[in-house]
Length: 193
Ligand SMILES: O=C(O)C(=O)C[C@H](O)[C@H](O)COP(=O)(O)O
Image 1 (spheres, helix red, strand yellow):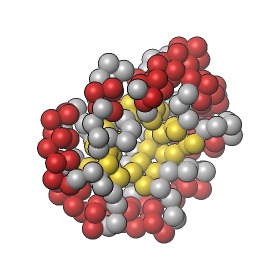
Image 2 (tube, rainbow, N blue to C red):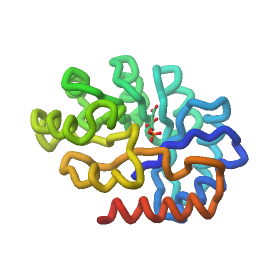
Image 3 (cartoon, helix red, strand yellow):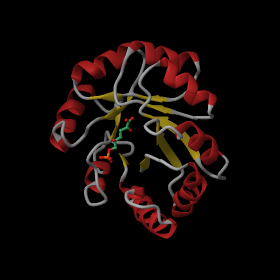
Image 4 (cartoon, rainbow, N blue to C red):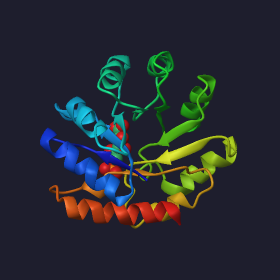
């Protein structure tokens, strides 16, 4: 399970990453949706055991800034050829968003086989992903994100083509380290079942 983080205050970066790692979640997606996101990536990267990447990466400029800040992977809500080429040039793992068969085919043409299914629930949820997966086989894997909750994550993770799920629920609301650690522990258990 990959927590999707929207962090507005850089002073929360380290305690938040520490609470997530303590709960058993180590792969952290920091969205570039707040002015301090790049600093947050730098700070979270100092936490032992954290693998920190950038989300909401929309173009090659975003990718360049995210990589300079220490992002170890890149997540995007969509897929463009310039972004995929920039990820390749920087040799950084890249998880682009797809919403339909055409997006996946464009990704395959670009040499990609791991995609974020986004926005997962409004795109038709599990039935939609099952239909897409039936066409592309098990070599194409997905990280559904968007509308997934603590209650529904296990259903998604049970699909053979789903490698992980993303979601913001683990850190939703005002930051409380103990609450985040507990939610992370519950989410980490989901991924083991
Ligand atoms: O922009 C990106 O690159 C993203 O990563 C988008 C996020 O995956 C979703 O916004 C998370 O959706 P919720 O869990 O429903 O809050």
